[in-house]
Length: 114
Image (cartoon, rainbow, N blue to C red; front, side):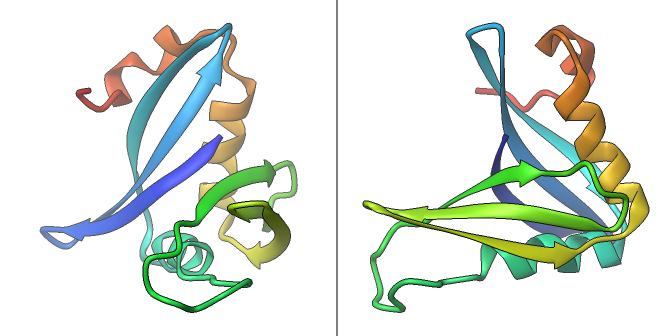
C-alpha cells in the first residue's frame, strides 16, 4: 500500500492510500482521528535522503501488523529507507483491514474518483 496523502477538512481528518489487489489498483480515502492524522503526516513529512526542493518521495506501508506502530518504506530515486512511527490502534486496524481484503470491491465505498 502506498500512502498518498493526509488532509484536514471541516474539522475532520482523512488519509489517502493506493492499494493493489489481484493486479488491480485503486485509490481510497478514509477518516482518521487527529492522532492518526499526525502519525501519517509524520511519515509523509520525512525526508531521509536529501532536503533539496523538487526531489520526489514515495511512501509505502511495509508493516501494519502491530497495533501501535507502523513501518513505512520511503523511496526516492534509487534510495530506500524504513522508518517506524507510533500510531493509534484505530489507525492500525484500518490499515490492517486494507491489507487483508481480498478484492478492491470490498472497499468500493471508500474509493476516490480517478
